[in-house]
Image (tube, rainbow, N blue to C red):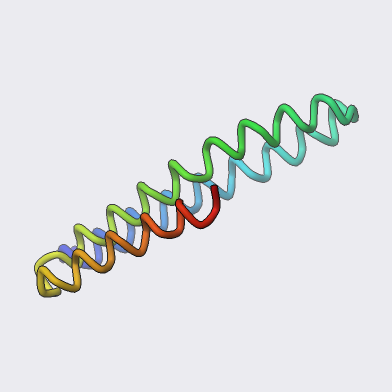
Length: 88
């Protein structure tokens, strides 16, 4: 498996883990059936989401680092930072 294929695989696995966490959380919300508990679960998801985004973005940026000029690499990192700033 080449470097690029390995990076894409790692990114996909992280997204599958994130999706599994989301589905599990939804099932837990249904299982408990209480708004207060669902809000707590949603709060945990709110903390996990950015970590997954940063991890997948970091993997992608590292995977592209040898293909992209330093200027474009800086722009990519800034783009991820702007996503976080814009959603605060």
